[in-house]
Amino acid sequence: MSIDNPLSRAEAAGTAAEAGAGATARFRADKTSAAASSQERVAHLAGLAIKALNGIILDEDVTYDEYNALKSWLIRVGDDGEWPLFLDVWLEHSVEEVANKNRHGSKGTIEGPYYVPGSPAQGTPGTLPMRDDEPGTPLLFQGQVTSVDGAPLDGARIELWQADDLGFYSQFAPSLPEWNLRGTVIADGEGNFQVNTIQPAPYQIPTDGACGQLIASAGWHAWRPAHLHLKVSAPGHQLITTQLYFPGDPHNADDIASAVKPELMLDVQERGNGAGRVTTYNFRLDPES
Ligand code: DHB
Ligand code: FE
Image (cartoon, rainbow, N blue to C red; front, side, top):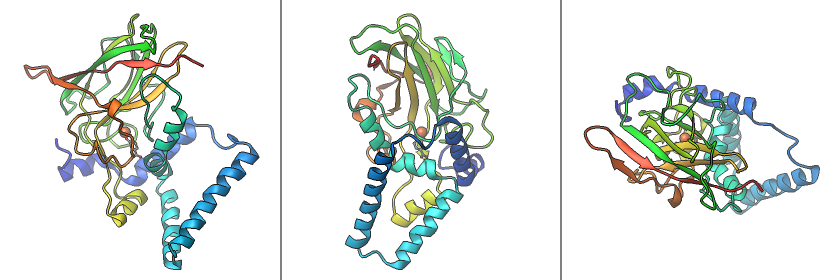
């Protein structure tokens, strides 16, 4: 199957409202809300945000028509459940930059809206849960988890989640098994791991909802380059949330979510004899501070 086959894509996609509702429900279930800041901090940050928006209105002579278009669009973002999508595409990369600026180990990048905790765990070598006839090029992903000083980390955990060969995530698109292409691999005593998966397809954020409407109205594109999502952790070390990318993807240079970094580019090799591809990526974790 191919990503530009409109029928297979439409069948697998569901609607933006379904994906958005799923991402909104997921966020509510997993993340603590409100009360994360003092009154002073709220007043400071909310004050700055309101001032910045007022500045744009005054500097750009924003009209009532434009103001009302914004109002109806914001209402639609909520109706479509697309606040997680909007925030993770256009703002999360800056939050991640701030959060990880003092780390010395492997680079992080955005989590995005489609992480689900508690994926099935297995030892190494492992295989991500997938359908018997899972479409796509087989990919062996392997590496070693060490501390920043190079010491191998016993008990390292590699949580992996990714889109399938059509660019869809299980639990956010209909008709995929619950844990399809989501799994946790426990590395061996030396931090080494191997996991069999398939190469993910580039991902297009839903085009039929509010975010898609903004993208179309602005003449932007909706693509993220193909990527693997990871959370890597080990005892005594800081968990890193990151993504890895594939050389040659047309959207590595203009990711809509601004989440690509040169350090996150994989080196992918053919294994020969139709065995698919192999790639090695080593993670270096910062000790807990
Ligand atoms: C979005 C989707 C992703 O797969 C991702 O990694 C980041 C953002 C999104 O649709 O917002
Ligand atoms: Fe993603």
